[in-house]
Length: 157
Image (cartoon, rainbow, N blue to C red; front, top):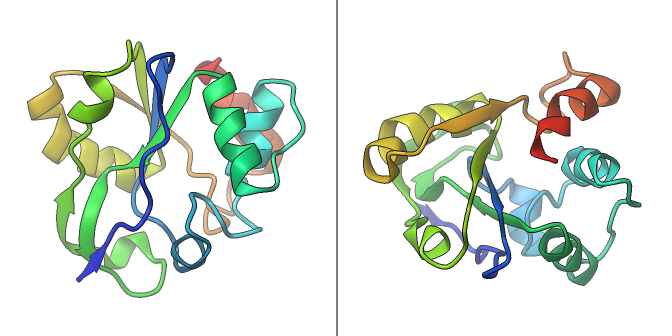
């Protein structure tokens, strides 16, 4: 069983919540979200907000807060092989009420199908708030080009 090692990023100014599934091996090693250089999350979100992609963890946190984005993952602990969402078993979920009770979150977005599926199953019954599924920024989602991702992700702005 692997326990999620990264704290959520949010403050009282956050207006949108983006939830992934569970951190990749690389993200867990780095200690921050979307740490794999091939993951397109930072490129895509920075482009949506007309900014340069942040590089350091400090820059990434500042980018999120400046753009009123709260960021976390659906899963709090699970069994997982490598970074493969399809291998996730025995998942427990994070308690996002800590974010929802602090910030005036207006929209919840899920980064990819697995995050959406888990949100629908475990979190929607509790939050009673629909989540919007966006295409995964993972390099495993090779069917989506960077331009197609940027186009789909514009909705967060």
